[in-house]
Structure formats: C-alpha cells, structure tokens
Length: 247
Image (cartoon, rainbow, N blue to C red; front, side):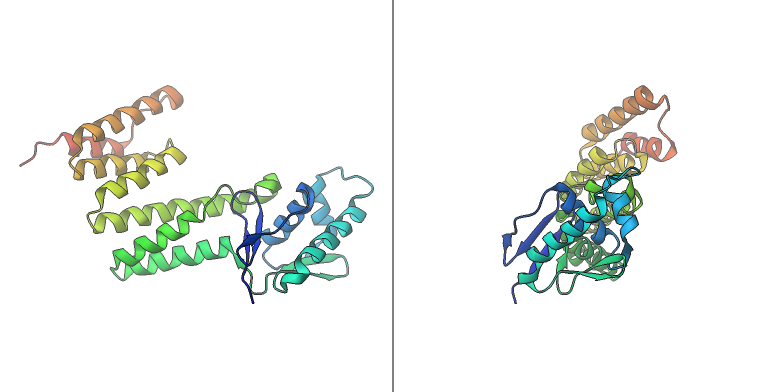
C-alpha cells in the first residue's frame, strides 16, 4: 500500500504515493485540521461549528459541516488509510497508517534527546535536524485561537530541538553549523537572552570574537530600544568571557 502523509505544519497538505492530493476550499480544510488537532478524540458538532464559524454561525452551519465531511470522505476513501469516523452528533479523525508530520516531529525529537543522553551526538544531531526540517510554518494556522495552546506547545518543542541540536553540534566541534542554528533561533526568538548568550559564547569558542561582540551589541541595543531594559546576568557573563584575556 502506498504511503499517505498528512502535513499540518504551515498550510495543510495531503500526499499519497508521493503526490499531493487536491484539497477542498479553506473551510473544509479547517475542518480536517480541527479533527487532526484533537488527535483521534471524538469532537461534537457544536464544538466543530464553533471552531469553523465562531460565536455566530450561519443557520446552515450544521448542513455545511455534514457536506464538508462528505467531501473529505470522497477524497479519502481511495487511500484506505486516513478516514473520518462518526457517531451520533460527533466526529473523529482516524489516522490509520497515515504518516502525520507532527507525530513524526515529536518522535524524532524524543530520539534526539535519547541519543544525547547516551552521549551519541552524531545520531542526536541527525534526529534533531530531521525534526526541524519538518517545520514548514506555524501548525494549525487555519484555526486561530482555538489552536493556540497546541501551537505554543509545539513551538516550545521546536525551540528545545534547536537547543539540543546546538549541544550535539558543539560536542562534535561543528561550531559553524551551531552558529547557523543559533542565528535561526535568535531570528525566531529575538528577545530571548538565553539564546543570544549561547550565540555569543559559541562565536567566541569558534574564534570569532569580533562577531561575538557584535552580536552582544545588537541584542543590547534591541533590548534597550524595544523593552527599555539592559542585558541580564547570563548575557553579560557571555560578553565578559569574550573580553577575558586569552592565555
């Protein structure tokens, strides 16, 4: 049987046999995304209607919801893996053997953590890299605030994965690659002093003292101009290590 892949990072995508399947319009896509968000749990129709149309759904919302379910079943039936189950007043997504990118992302991160704990930085780096490559954009973006908690959880996992990747790269003296990952991290987390401190320290270890000081000055200015605060102890300590005389 050919593999079916459901991609939830960024815009919804559904692939079968290495080919993208044509998708219905935006609101039916949001329905499948919502069912995927609840990970196989039964979801009653009132909750689905509220997710798709908000507090003031049209009178035809329930009829439209059932039509969307029919659309998806026609699309999914030939693949014989991903399906939508129903019972009175509720639906759930049954993934079957479908590969879901978020589940794969979580598995790869856990593998990376185990490899780090086993002092196997090469394997850890490959697992973290594979996980981070799956992140094509904010997951469940079509659902707005309904998905905020899950988006926050997954973003925190991504940030932990980046941190683990840097640790694995530094353990192999792959400083240039670690700097690249940290540059990506500070672009995504521009006010995170912990990440900036690690970038400054990594640049210093790589022998790039001028770049390390430039990075410090950048975040120092950003914190003052945007937040009206000075760098904290960890970031200041990273700067002092750069300025310390070398033996």
